[in-house]
Image 1 (cartoon, rainbow, N blue to C red):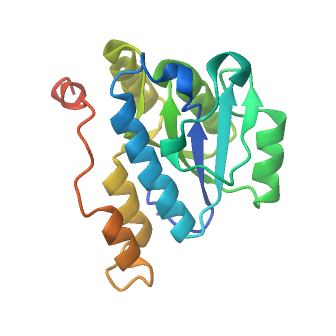
Image 2 (image 1 turned 45 degrees about the vertical axis):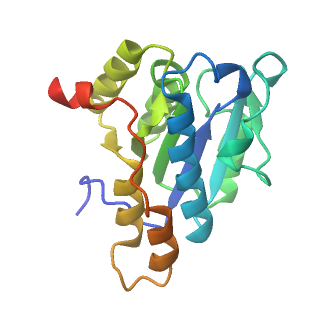
Length: 197
């Protein structure tokens, strides 16, 4: 059924947005957000879901943090808030134009929002992993998630995404994914968002 947001390993791509060194001291729950994004990246590698990594003005904001585990991914550098640069669009085309996007990173009200709007305008299905997205301000983060939800983005959690991708304990990669879920995802302060719905 179209439009319900059921994730699939076929036709999906993981977008990892701007998790860089200079953001470390200023982003709300940075360590936990990156930890969740790292799990998503590991899972996508196991499930052969392609990944795209961006860095916002790395000369000033530094490289991607090592704990993301993004070695081997060549970052697309950008100055625009949207990840949808020419080089990213070219990469998506070479991946067969995936129609489902799993989006995580920072900041929710800036690069995540602008990327999501660009993707939605292209008719793509956008899944934002709420516990793998943040901002400097929790207020900006929560309002951005609320606004994006109004625009048609699907919100989910790291664990929710991983379980939807495998869908069955008989999946050949389930045990590997299960290991990534051995410990619950760290709290990233989202309860305030859901209490306001």
